[in-house]
Image 1 (cartoon, rainbow, N blue to C red):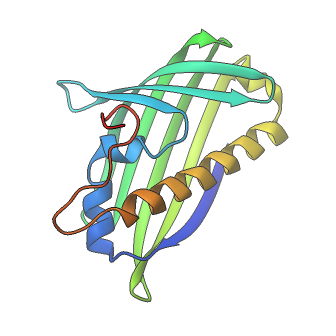
Image 2 (cartoon, rainbow, N blue to C red):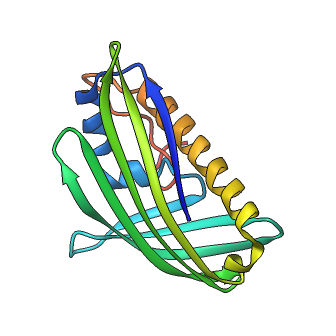
Length: 164
């Protein structure tokens, strides 16, 4: 299933790029991500819980940057299996593109998500609704974290990064 979301932030593209240039920080903006652990091979292990319809599952995913256009676009691919809850597999390729936009940045998010097993059986409408919900919450999380971003400070820690 493919979906797209576009949103704007009131920060210049250079600032947004420096925020997105850290795959862990980017992953922690995705709703349901509980932890991100860097691995030696440049990939990361991600633990994420999602509820779709009446089913819930916790996934262990391997995530890596699969494409990069310096300062303009980043593509991240994840693949994994459920470790708790509904049995299933998840794979996704997510791309963010940054475009200057009236003193800020327009962010175009595109995703191609495949879900198998019990979660994949809930139906296309339910999955599409969940995908839109996750994309909207991702946009809100990015906006919130970027508001805290300044030239001499990093955003407040997200889940799994410490802090309160």
